[in-house]
Length: 84
Image (tube, rainbow, N blue to C red; front, side):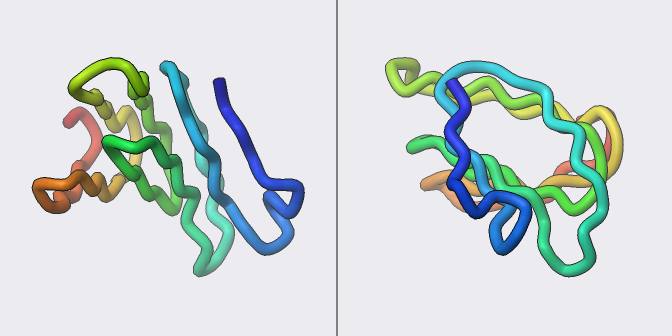
């Protein structure tokens, strides 16, 4: 399930995710796309990012197919490049 605010694209590029999805993020100047889940937040300005994050599972998985993404969890944050 992906939930986006009504203002998505105009002022915000944020989506809530409970499940698994591939996001293709196009450049939008200074506004990165952000995917949120209680376990993980993934931010990317341009690229392709796969996120698997279910609310009832103890872990999330993120794969950057193209570009770069910053992944934040309770343990800290890390930047992933293509192929990571």
